Image 1: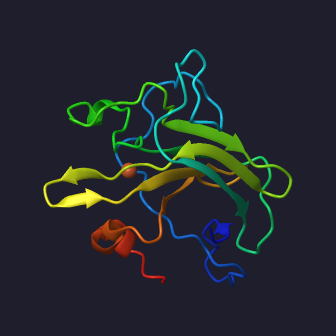
Image 2: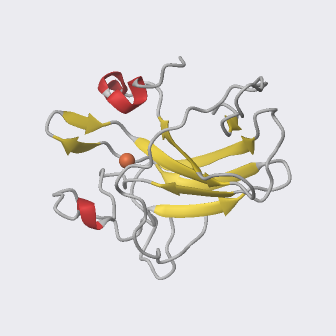
Length: 173
Ligand SMILES: [Fe+2]
């Protein structure tokens, strides 16, 4: 994953490649998850791990000069491996829930800006007729100072990437 950076102030040169911002979307966690940590694969009291391909996800939060941002809260939320969000707005979906998948997690960056999560690869889902979203993971970064920043992570090589207008709306190659 490319270096993360919050948007630089106008007139300042960016020294690192900025991760493009992407919208948070309609499925941000609406209720307190059963467990709140950076391991989305196991829920206390569950009867096993979440279904799907295990994914170890890590990166660093850097400012526009490439300096680490410690103590930033990093949240992720995503569909399960079938392509279903555990969210009321996705409740009419015919795609099954996974009772062992947390769906939402958070971590705090350490001194070098690092964060990590354990999760599963999300499935694609039909957002509306004619548009199926490719697998993606939503991120929100809450730095100790400054505004909340959101983006989405995609998976290279997914055929659905080619037609996703949010992904292809990023002008920076
Ligand atoms: Fe989404």
